[in-house]
Length: 355
Image 1 (cartoon, rainbow, N blue to C red):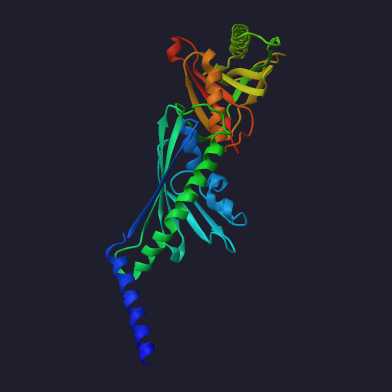
Image 2 (image 1 turned 90 degrees about the horizontal axis):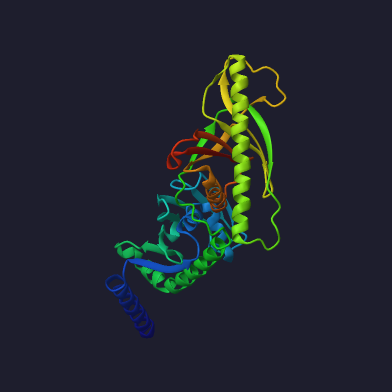
């Protein structure tokens, strides 16, 4: 039995040595960090990070376990959570956004059951080439001696996690760079429930002149200016007609001008423009109709500046919707809060109905 006692003594000595090394020399916390440069504005990257529904589109762990089933709760931002179940692979767990700083930082906590609850942080910084993203994860094994094996686990998984982070950031970069290269950070969107509003309007159909093949930038600018002038003229003439009919009926204008898009493409814009009103309905006129503005869930954006710059605002709105994975439920409508006066002070509210 001496040989057995000797083996047992050696094993106890090895275990004790490993315990001592782990407890006194291995850190209780592990931080893994990797960076990537993405050729898109930081607002685009932040939009993808601040929504756990898109996390599964670029996560390295989703790629390694395609059979995992995800369920989500809440909208993007703080409080949103994702839970997944799987028969193997990454194992079951959940993730919750616990902190979010607009266009700068997203923090989440993972709940992996007995495997721990590591914290993950994505920091997004502006860069001349686009945005620099830093992905960091911290896992704390606690100072309790019973968790010494956790420290060895951290030591063994560090390189694997570093490879996962690099793979995930490459996938995030590829996903982000499929989106429009438009910086929509200046926008200040507001989610709301729009109420219908009765208004009298004239419907217009404005077309753009055909673009010659190989047209120069100067020619394109000229075509844009001509098209904008036609739209502006149609708006002004329609508002005069509506205002006159309301006056004739003894009705009163109850708010700023309203413009509702019926259909739109690169060559043609069909829209209704008029005034909300109270009082008697205007007498029959083939040019003037009565209707209601759209209602329901919507996003509101505010454009400040001349009408000629509205196109840029709509381009930013399109990029915002694409990055945030928001689907429009119809054409936009506008309220021309302050359509005249000093160009810099002109203000128009843009409403996008959303699903």
